[in-house]
Image 1 (cartoon, rainbow, N blue to C red):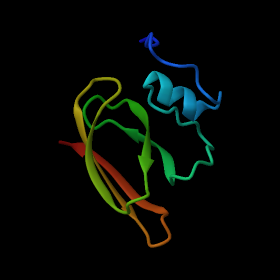
Image 2 (cartoon, rainbow, N blue to C red):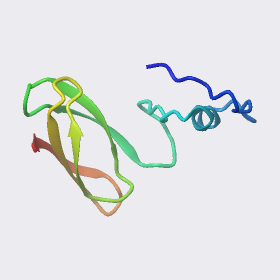
Image 3 (cartoon, rainbow, N blue to C red):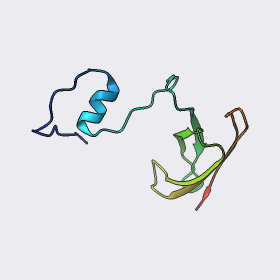
Length: 98
């Protein structure tokens, strides 16, 4: 899906990715190996519905978590559960039917 520039939007003061994303209202793109300030981890899981392997980026900044994410292939809701240790490392993750 293409994003359209607002006509009243001024050119970005900077051409870095964050400034451009903010100007056009885009979500940031996370690349494997990104060294941003937010501790994230790209995790490969198997969908409990269709069995396809999917990659998802997990935010580890607030510790252990539980949330719902739709499968990128079959769009079924997957309950993602993760355990994070005191140092912020991902210990365990599971993907279950919601």
